[in-house]
Image (cartoon, rainbow, N blue to C red; front, side, top):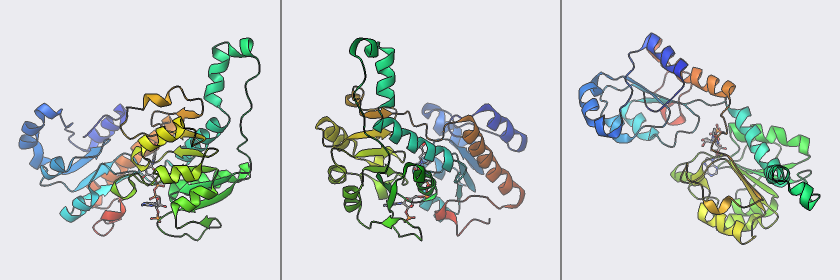
Length: 312
Ligand code: NDP
């Protein structure tokens, strides 16, 4: 067991497995030398370092909590014959709602105006300045996968024109942009919802941010690594980007302090899927993958890299 999960999950796992929590760094080598060979399955809330994976010679399955698995070398696991599973789909609606919340809150200054009321500024300064309507905008989705599609499904009620950029074109009624900069130029709002990792590192760079422009809003519910945070902060400071709604950051839980005073920025502590209901569904799926594997060697939701070695 790697990382901290809810008590009910540990209780459920203990009914079927002998559970060994991975101890802190200082005690890790001794633990792995003692127990490493006995461990066949891993449940993780925070990925797994490749050295730890390789210190478990009889490991067969890694069941990871979350749909993103950029903190697990899944290619390496597949080569070793270790199946990695994750928790797709059960969180689509929650994360899509978070993206919409961040966009609306940023464009209507929800958090800044909440502060305006609490600080007594409404009384002292009168009506707050006007904001920009989210209605009828062109919204670009970077990564039209499971969650990206759930975001697109929500955009109709705002009269939005949906466009997207992914690695491949999809059979959908939205315009595909093979070039992200070109899409950003066409957009009022850019919502990032790709996986993290090397393939997407800083794909939202200074050029993309400038293409989005001084009226544009960037929403990031993907991974902090997807956006060049230094370029983002600079663009906001210089008024070259209209606003940002951010759930994820490059060096979590560190968030650039320059953002704290900005009224056109909405910040969340990586809580895209963090409701009781959705986290419960994710936890059940993590346990279900392990239980199924124990029962008959099949799994429910392997990551694509392990599709060839997993029985479903
Ligand atoms: P999917 O795999 O269904 O979708 C990912 C999309 O990203 C696909 O459309 C894919 O394109 C696209 N993509 C991948 N690499 C690139 C690239 N280099 N350039 C452009 N597009 C790319 O994943 P999900 O929708 O289920 O999840 C997406 C991500 O959301 C997760 O990996 C995770 O990082 C993040 N997430 C964040 C949460 C939060 O709390 N903020 C919660 C849950 C997820 P193609 O189809 O063409 O391959």
